[in-house]
Length: 406
Image (cartoon, rainbow, N blue to C red; front, side, top):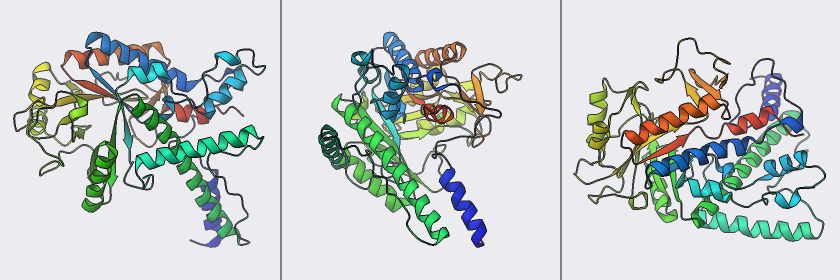
């Protein structure tokens, strides 16, 4: 790559939004800042409603959320939104305090599933207890500084210039930007994990590791942190059933989530020639907990009898079976999809996800979409599942990028 091309590439990297960002819809115009909704509260409300409904139907039904860490504790974005909505501070006393967990949300869920706590570039590289204590200590220092009139960001923000060479300057600036974004994501994760642990909720993780050695290390670190983890490597994309014995294999019955020592997510069944083959392959596993799609290839739903078969390990003891339910995206390969659907029709199909063909980001506040989610959850409960993992929950971050408050 020549020098000019390098400069252009680095400039684009600096200008690019975070890793979760999607392409903006064509001809998109953001609304006035006073009209921007609180997307986190909208997402939070839907999850609370689904969780309460599930518990009313089946009190021991388990509700887990994948990612969506910013929904647990009030962060700076929502504090800024409060300022926009109430610039004079007339309702200041009614605002939810910054840094405090949302109790109705915490009470509605049973745990959090996080991606890559131990593997990959986002890994913490330290015990969770240590990360939590370091964040608490830093927050106390920052609070003391604010009391003295000193204000600095919660995560370090190094300022350039870093070099007199333009290429090196852009490279260093891009690296600083990446590191700052990583630290901010980790800070939000620490707040969520800390709040949920204090409330007695379970933390799970999905680890995409480079190889068997890193996977084994992830399992050991997860045991230390009391995290229920599944580590995979190679071309395993959470759609396969691995050969061999699962980590922590045991013959014990697993009636509750807290007793599980391992779990297996098989989020799509495309690798299996038939529904019967898929169910049989899952039935022959010995994991304490299974997470599967509610339907074979998104179309042929699991019946109560199918779920009942999956509730027993090959060893014969009871285990838990969970279904995955996507909140923030709709998929054109799922049973509910109709041939004439496209972006904007129905209105809850907000924009296509260019990184995942066939996926569409949804408007969480749309009544028809919420109705579809509710009916799907009802079907999951009727099919005999022990719980649900609410997936694709962090699309609110994309909407926030579309609708900045400054």
